Length: 136
Image (cartoon, rainbow, N blue to C red; front, side, top):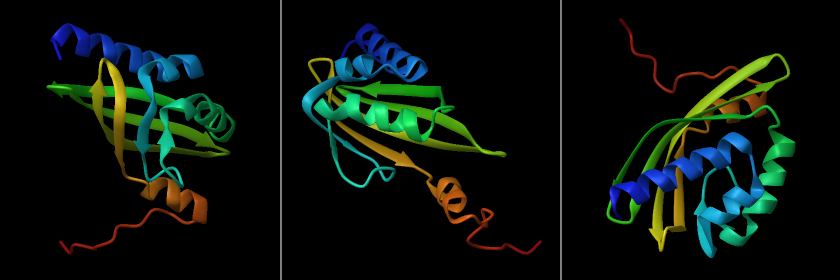
């Protein structure tokens, strides 16, 4: 994929997140594309992105998504991002990387690599704890 096409795709992806526009998300996807993420309980198909956007808006209306960096090689784009949301009095942020395989400029497959620990701790009502304590 030429650099200018990759830059355009990343700009449209960031715009979809910034505006939370279901139609903008749908335009990025092949209808039969597949989204795999530990956030969701199943694989989401490209044609379902409008519905997913509605569900996400209900669950996290104050969600902020921030593009940190990206890179492209061939038809694969990696996007590093940070999200945050306020849940009552608590402010939670988490980071991840999306690996997207594009076909004709649209997402055929997206795999989300994300640290869900902050969200899981919030859901369980506990403070986030390290797995290993390293003595000084």
